[in-house]
Image (cartoon, rainbow, N blue to C red; front, side, top):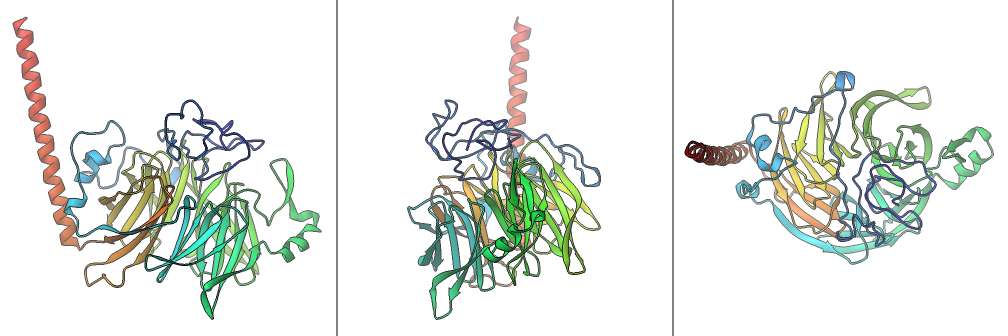
Length: 485
């Protein structure tokens, strides 16, 4: 996997075998990476990484964002400026602090419900629906869990399961080999899942293969435009659940009509691997890439043809874009990067940069939004829980417990515990430590949130005061010594 990519800190021998977000390319492929963040579990590590345990090899390059027109942003601007969360030691990405800062002490009952462990592979994908959880790993198995117990499972011959999404009665899985599998549940026996097809369908492949116009050039070779030529990195649904979007390391995203499994369009979106795609309201689609950009696309219906046109580039930076998320109302778009930052944009009349959330020491690998909360999973093994109030965000909790990078997240409403004024969520986190953890997270009523913020403000002021007194004492001491000389 590692070879020849700019900014890489390790090397890979043999065939490409990826277990994380695409950071670098190898072999005879075109170099992809502009940065140093990466992760893998191969024993053939370079001398630089030899002393670091497997699954914990990470490079680090700071963001160097550039202005991009109307949606440009000030890299020095941060969310909740002036709030204790912005100024807190946890919010500083460099240098560190000896000041003990605990968010969880002030929060109501945010914690671990349980762990799902099956020693068969790193967890790369999650999908939750009602009382079922689907998990995908590099073992080629898709496991189904119910009430924290294994309920069912099925196996694909299509390689590492990098993405899972549920659309009504259909389950779509995206794989390392570039294929999308379609599964359905047997109504008479819900524990049995049967493969009902592959995207693109064999019929469509045969139909296209006889037309010269159906071929495109991909990395110096000819390929059908309806097929992905590299790993599937992400799957998402349109807001009306009629279209499926697939993102790939082949630098494209494709649009599929769910009703007949037909590929409607293939868009050459980026100059490097497309790591994430997410659809929002009003036909907007967002893509994030290893080339460091976030792009906006608009879906339009032209007669019987579906067409996606580029609208805007939200971000240009050196660090790879690793994940995207849009809140339920479509008013905020979040972007996680390999430098540990989460940028976000607010959509009013147009998309404008709202700020940067700084809570991780290593790459942000996954994002999920629910209600007023945003969850960011990272290579630093933690999950930050951010709460949005108007235009401000604050980290209200940090979920710890994984022993490997957090690769995927899924969130569902906790119907049993949610009450008036106290919305609660069940959060699922999949990790390269081969486990899935299940968390209960409260959105917090406004008065409880304000109380937590006030407590943190007081702690911060006390910390600043003690530092100032210490600094003044040190300066007085040095002045006395100088006068003595």
